[in-house]
Image 1 (tube, rainbow, N blue to C red):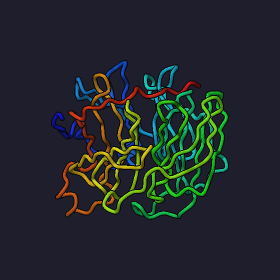
Image 2: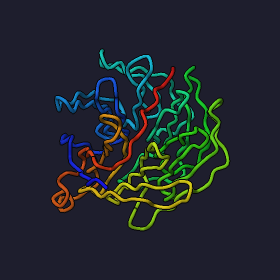
Image 3: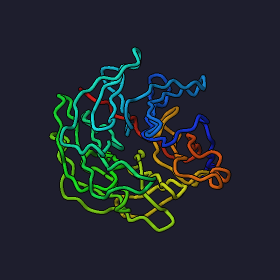
Image 4: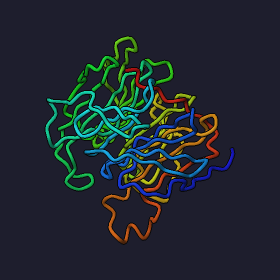
Length: 299
């Protein structure tokens, strides 16, 4: 077993860092700062960060096949022209309550953008329950709502055979699975595949490795778990010098590095002094597993 190393690589802190996606073509990492209202792109080779400010809280960013990105921001899906540094609405979610916002999102294997909503928090972790929904933005820009009654719509991922959709509603403290139809994008037959232990705290973002195991970020748990969704067991725990771990993605050369985002929002001075790297992005090397390239929005 190689030795696992955790290092802080992006030192410009995010209030709530989220939605990391590796861009193989340029060797860059794209991510958002939700309440900091920015989409950022970090180049490890130059250590430079380029950021674009958003109008509202931005929950997630995904690459777009035709270039640029798509974001789930406030209560809209919008396209980002990175060269021109501007943002254009694709569709406003008219049915969404004004005190709601998009949170985590990811592109499925067919190029559709799945993203969910939640009530805007009064304080970190304090919000009106059951206000969120899960949506899909199709490449033709139609939107389908899968279900509502969600507390905090969070991590999303698809099995390697594209037959299962994994999903996290954070305050249910579980990782769930659905049957997934690649041809239509529909989901059904919800079930629990992993229940969080008390010290693992709140499940947040997640990603999958080439062995079909899930990596789940633990908000307030200071760790990322590797779980086997087939057996519902935890296989590995990687700990971080920050407790509010928000999401993760594989990247780097051959997708063998795990990039992990975090948050400092809601930490008092004493907690900040204990974890000065809260809000940074970490890179984990030596895990001995690899991830898969992200999918891009096809519309």
